[in-house]
Each structure stands twice: as C-alpha cells, then as structure tokens.
Picture (tube, rainbow, N blue to C red):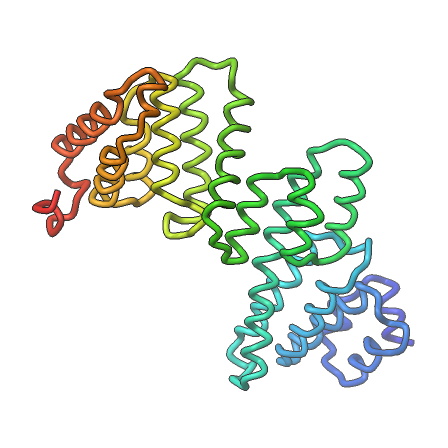
Length: 306
C-alpha cells in the first residue's frame, strides 16, 4: 500500500531509494510491465549496485515495440544500458562482454535509424507519416532500414550511412550513391553562381568526410577527387577547391599527388569535353604553389618524396 501511494503521488525517487527487496518485488509484480514501472525498476537496480540487471531492464525498455516510447527515448535507454555495463561493479564474465557489445551495436544502428527518421519527418504525406510511426515504435535492423525506408524514398545520405554502419564495401554501389548525393545538391543550388554551387558541394562533401572519415569505404577519396575536379572544370571555378578540401579532411599530400598522377596518366578526354583540357595541369600547378607557400602541409619525413 505504501509503495502504491508513493507511485500515485509521483514520489518515485523515494520509492527507489528505499533499497528494500520488497520494492523489487513490487516493481516486478504481475501487470507491472509499463514503461513507467520498468523505468523505476532499472533505477532501483542501479542504486542497489546491480548494474547488469539495470542494463537488462533498460534493454527491454529500448527494444520492446510500443508506440508510447519514441526513438529518442530508446536511444537514451540504450546509452544508459551501455554506461551500466561499463560500470566497475559489473564484472568480466564472457556473457556480460557479449551483452555490452550487443548494446554498443544497437546504439550505432539506432543512431542511423534516427537519421532516417529525421529525414523522413521532413516529408509531408501519409506514407511518410506511417513510416515515422514505425521508426518511432521499435528498433529496426540495418537491412530493414535500407530496404523498407531509405531505398524506397531514395534517401541517398541515409543509404550511405547505412552502408557505412554495415561495413559494406561495394565500390560500384557506393560510387552510385555519391553520384546521387552530388546531383541532388547541385539541383538544389542550380540558381546560384558557379562559385557558390561549388562551395555548396564542397561543404556537403566536407560534412560527410567528417562523418565517415577518409579511411571508410563509404568515402572513396580517389573517386571523389575525380568527380569534384570534373565539376570544378565544368563550372570554371578556382582550381584550389578540391585539393584544399582533401588536405583539410586529412588526406596526405603524397596520396593526393598519386591520385592526380593517375588521373593525368589515364589520358581521360573528359577535360576537353568539359571545356578545358588543361584543367588537371592547372590544378596540380595550384597544388604545388600551395605546398611551396605552406611546407607544413607535408611532414618532414615525406618532403623529399614530394
């Protein structure tokens, strides 16, 4: 009766701080499976030093399908579960390590789901609204996110994020997704000046480069340098945009020089078709000038090679 009174009067902190075994029995009683009861139960376990039990309750809160618990809450529950499992008092049993790894994977996938949800919420129609409801009411696998949400709506950036999270390395698919991203960005800024259009594209690639890192298969540096230089040639903008961006993202000067060398020796005639067959030569000359003006771009151990 006392516990019921505390609950009905929203004195939840008082309830979980009692620390009595009877509190756990009360919170685990038949029919007490509501999010509110489970929320109190994990807090009780945490205060009692039973961090693994608290994490299991949080896992249940995050993974049980129900409309009343939104995705941002599920992500919060998973984050708290990870923190509980990393607590010093959990122990080092193998099954606990497996559970922690599962939780960490779920957090990563849930964050991808959040990106998909945020994107779909900007679409205003009944189909999108139903998708948002589904994304909020349960945790979705990467395969489902791709096949049932991102791909049907052609959410290119979300597709790339899904591929990155899954460790996918299909070069043709990734290149195709990047083509779509660049085309979509260009379509949205087609009324701007050429320099402004290039700035928009560079900004988008910079953001995604920081998201994925240059070592990810989903950020194909050589392919992007080629595509961006073709665009730079077509728009007739200044020659420094692409190599400055790549250096900013952490691509080494030696790697960039090798990429430009391969582009030059491939004898691709696209430059003539885009209106400037000397584009690559001008870019490399500009790149060389930037190095001579700032030799710190290259570590001392690599300068002789440059």
